[in-house]
Amino acid sequence: MFVHWGLYALPARHEWVMSYERTSVEDYNAYFERFDPDLYDPREWARQAKAAGMEYMVLTTKHHEGFCLWDSALTNFKATNTAADRDLLVPYVEALREAGLKVGFYHSLIDWHHPDFTIDDIHPLRDAPHVEALNAERDMNVYREYLHGQVRELLTNYGKIDYLFFDFSYRVGSIADRYPGKGRDDWDSGKLLDMIHDLQPGIIVNDRLDMPGDFVTPEQYQPSGAMMNGGKEVPWEACQTLNGSWGYDRDNLDYKSVDVLVRMLIDGVAKGGNLLLNVGPTARGEIGPRAAAALAGMGEWMRTHARSIRGAGSANLVPPPDCRYTQRGNRLYLHLFAWPFPVVYLPGLADKVSYAQLLNDASEVVMEKRDPSLQAQNTMPGGQPEGTLTLKLPVQRPNVAVPVIELFLNTESELA
Image (cartoon, rainbow, N blue to C red; front, side, top):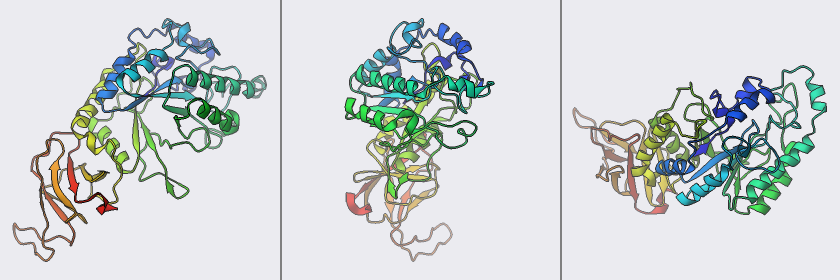
């Protein structure tokens, strides 16, 4: 579970509100003065994540607005100087460890509050007069030391951290048009990574430092297949939102259905990837009712279908239309995005499957192999190509988000 939470929850108009509305640091300070998350309960966040079938959480320690959820020694723009009056990462880390979840931190490389972070094409002051003169008074060397110092704090003061998600580099592209973008030289990414691995040798780090990371992070889209680099498959994780916004966005009601969310999860695993699904808690610190309902819906599906996801990956097979395969050891899982009537044909699997069942209730699915020479006649279907396994399905679709058929393979190696 990804959690985007900061001062932007107060305006509740997207986490980029400071940039979108060209808000000055002085005006944005109104949210700092009113930040009072009296309902913040990271144990409840962890409970909902665990119930949804998630195994780790990633929280925005600092987003682009520059506000820090922890008691950083390097700034006054932090939670301890608000009505919260405490380091908000301490209970978060404790809650995750109590729940048996791995601990993840998000940290923005961008900082619109810091006086030495130079103005660029996404900075709130990008349309101010005399940007060049303003930038002449800013020093990215100073900001870079600040960035490294804050990362050092995060990886020193909270015990073992499992996952670090940086966001983001933009050295080239459409948001590096009028003014120079920022990338590895601005962050001194090599030195930063060396420090990270010295402090936390077992940590995994994403790919947004303008350098290769331990995994890649497609955002707001599902890859069409395995993610590749240099002709080789690489680990990947799709970052997805419930409604198109990362932070709490009160009037954005474009929520994905539970069915769509479950399909995204399945689709990612079927292509060798994973899902990092985001929630944006309210300014009082709660996961809102729509987000909570989505998590609960995913949890209900995962309760009976987790073994088709956890520890599973892609299968060396082409699935039937509107289906996805995942595989875990000698079990192959057929996820039916559409419910066929009354059979589904699985090319290449005849004589390779010893038993089939619906995963939701472990009820048997009858298998047959039809003689390829049979001709269709009246109510008698014809044969299927050699090697095709036919599964006979019930007329009534199981009442689950996505039905899954569990296929027990004769040997684990037969599909290689």
